[in-house]
Structures are given as C-alpha cells and as structure tokens.
Length: 250
Image (cartoon, helix red, strand yellow):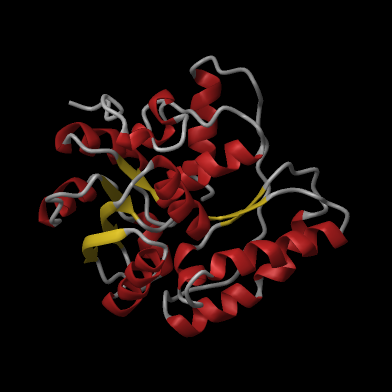
C-alpha cells in the first residue's frame, strides 16, 4: 500500500497526467504474523487509524489489508467501509472510504470479470477464506496458489519477479482475469504488465484495484501507465472485459 499505490499515482504524473498531484498519509494497524487472531485485532484497530487520518486534509481513505477484511466473514467490506466513513465524518472529514477487499471484488465485477485464478502469500486456510469471500460475491475462482508466508515483513520483501514463475503453476484455463497478488502487502507491480503480455489475459492485483477505486472516488481518471488492463484506458467503462477488443494484450 505504501509503495505500490504511490508508485502508480506518481507514474500518472510522470506520464503527463496533470489532473492532480498527490500527498500520502498513513496510520498503521499493528500485525506481525498473518494469522486470524492478529487479523481480527488489526481490524479492530482500524477505528483508531481512521480517526488519526481525519487530522489530514485527505480526499479519500483506503483500508489496506485485504485478508483482514475477508477473514471477518462474507460481505464484511461493506460494513467496514460504512463504519470507517462514520468515524471520519464524526472527526470532521467527510470523504469516501475504500477497502482493498471491496476494491478487488468491485473492480472485478465492474470490469465484467466472471472467472479468475489468484495468487496469495497466505497460508492455505486464509487463502481458502479469500477464495470463499470472492465466490460469495458471484465470481468464479478456478484456481488459487497459497505461498504460505506468515511473516508480514517477509511478504512485503518478496521479489515480485518470483510471481512470473509462480503463475506458471496456476490453472488459468477458461478464466478471463488473473489476480497476481490478492494482497496489498505482496509486491507485484513490476510483474503485472509482463505477466499480462505473456498470458494474453488481463492481470491485476489488490493494489491496482485499490488505486483504481481511490482514483474514481477522488473523481480522477482511473488510468496509470504500465499497470495492465485494469488501469488502462480500455477499462474506463463498465463491462469492458465483455466487449470485443477490450483485451488489449496479444
């Protein structure tokens, strides 16, 4: 969240998109091991973080832990977004709230994705929770890889180039989208466009979907260079995946 989303927004500026410049503000929820008990404690701490961020003149707030939301039960992102919005509003900051969990499922549905395969850094039981959550939103998950990394710092330090080999083990037959990282902590941005070009399928990540939803919430064009189909101009309208020629990769 603190590396890839700023990188995406800076890339817009470098590409000559001068509709906005950006500042970034963060408040951290504590977590060391990516296990359910710590995820639940982390989610409770989101209230404090939202109140702290209300001190800054922010235009949109993003909650950046996909599995913390998805481990709390089906559809929980809606409750979390409403709760954090209320906290911010009470603190004098009436701004949109985006969760990475909600952004992933919302952007997949908005783009017209019906069937996906995913890579996660989580242990298998948490990966299964993520898969079930996405399926509950009406999206088919054909296959998933659980890299079984439970140290949160190790997740953030993983070389994104490794995902190029990981995805070779992923069953993508019949899917219309690959989620290369269903986690905003696991870096994937450097690999997204290369994997998309190799597979000939739209490839996205939790971070890309979060950035796209935050840009939309801020009423900015949700486009950034070298970030795959989901942040391309081909994906500006709803259901873009379903139209002939929408898949811009070879």
